Image (tube, rainbow, N blue to C red; front, side, top):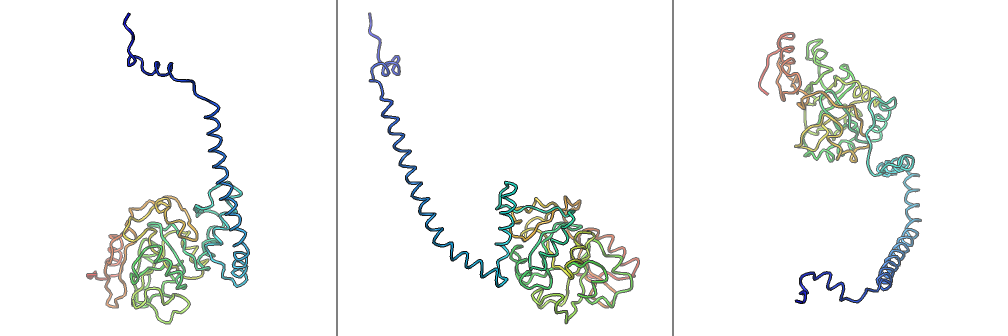
Length: 314
């Protein structure tokens, strides 16, 4: 009978011909590797513990000095608060969470952050925005940094009520009732900036620019925050410069950690156009549309039809 070739069932043939493996040796080798790995981990943990013990006194002394002098960094405070929440809820302490703008303490929390010199994210009547105290130069600079905006590009401000507009811009030449027809609403009015407004708007806000853009958003939360803060807020869209504006808080989630607080007011039913910017600084009873945004056509009809103003080129 013909002998069966080795290559007909090569795997079975070699299993049959090969000597049995030593399972004990294989187990011993695996155990040796595991023991070696455990030893390395123990060494690294020992080194980390020694390092932590060495730097802990200096860290405690540094933090005590910061607390004593009132210079404890805002970022450290925020991390500490998130760590407390994380321990209580089991959530990730490194990820900022948005605050519901309808919460009972949301306005007070936003105003407190602004007074500390923080930057917050807020819903408005058009799109989400980044806001900082208009009276705080450091906060305004942070706003530019988060936005990635080129220095010198002007920022608008927002106030709580129409009567506050004249505090920051010269509106004495406008016909009575004109501003009240445009505001509150999705409109930014450009007026000549009032000088001598120290304590109201910082010199770092649009230095060298004669005009100032002022908003009274048709959004209760932002207006209440301005009132509680006690002054105007610098306001710009909540996105990096050159990117699409946001109508929902989740759309700029990658920038949440750059802010001191983020307030979620839900989705904004807008067209991402932003506010219409209208120049009302001229004393010649005319106006110019600098940027066409929300309700631009309606604004033009009001100024031309009700106040007999003439439209000029921007």
